[in-house]
Image (cartoon, rainbow, N blue to C red):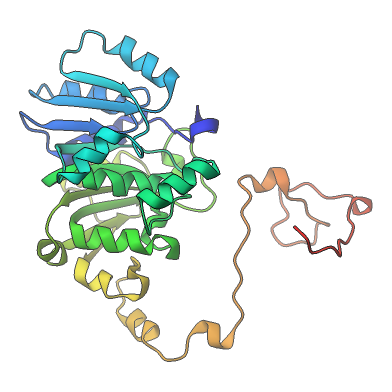
Length: 325
């Protein structure tokens, strides 16, 4: 399922416990899990022993079969097979200003969208970057929340700084109060190890623009193990962590509204300088193929960082002078 849908199912007790507690579940809550997987969040929600309604959605037939069997005796849970990003009932809910009071999720990261679906997503989510699924899930689910509803998602941290996610950041900063963002190595999450980003847990509340811009965001990093998430909940032993506090208005006014995680204020002088790095140096993007040690080779042992990489036979190397494709 991971290869087809890029679904990485949650089975860390520390992560699940933190996220469910950040939702502040109350009686009469209507909770959505938009990419339910095997139901780890649902298990934790049920253990809360609150009088709530839970709706679980997943696009994967296998996951739906597992959920139906696992929760066949649970009366306050509805399981539905659907595509959260295109579901027509959810379109209606979004159009009326939301329905759910709480949303929790671990949406798919980087799942491939065929070109026909990508065209649909471009029309539906105008201005959003449709090649990345997790950001679309975040954008979609905020629209499904009632006013003051709360959301907690575990997602890669690239939405905080990549240029392609600027419009999402602007939407977040002006439509939600971002309560807390934890940033931690992807290896904390069982079965995941990104070479290009960390993971994050974002907890937010849907609100008006005035309240959003008056809000302060807390960003926390420097974790060495998931057990430290409990320290955040208990507000203890925080000395070893890096904690940043920013106003959402301040972030919105930065170039591309990027989250620049530094306590120094000197970066503003750099950002506002008339001369930019691009004026004095050429900049190029890096290359990441998904599994460098599998697909890349080094010429010899003098290449920097060559350890653990296989060496290429030079008789297999040739120069290509054709520019087409």
